[in-house]
Length: 184
Image (cartoon, rainbow, N blue to C red; front, side, top):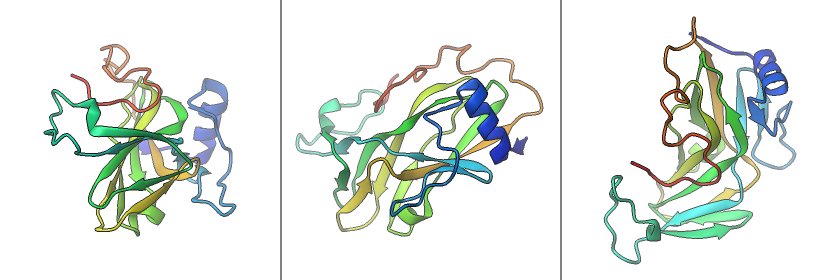
């Protein structure tokens, strides 16, 4: 596997719609940077957030997740409570080629503030908005800025296409739009 360059990412975005909307260069104009970088793409977080709350004293169960454990907000700035988390999604819609695996890493600007971004790998053949999890590891409230950079995606191209892709096995998170809660 090899990591793909800005040239390859740009070509895939423009010819195959791999990233939509696509920002061709890093944007930094007073915001947390986003757009194409040397060997990756910095995606933006959309303005829809699901803020975790435990008002109903629910148990977090990935097999039976209680949707009422979240408060929905559409806002330019999301406040994450101390030692809590929010779910959000990327502005960008991704279409992963059959011979590519995409890994996501958090932005250093957020990491240096104790805010961790978690995303599982985007598998070959998967497409959709990426659900993002922002964890506030601090004892203080923390801000997330909508329509600014949230994380960086790295594209690893395999030596051959996989035998069975995420699309082939009809993965449960295929074509997701907006924030998607855990599914079985």
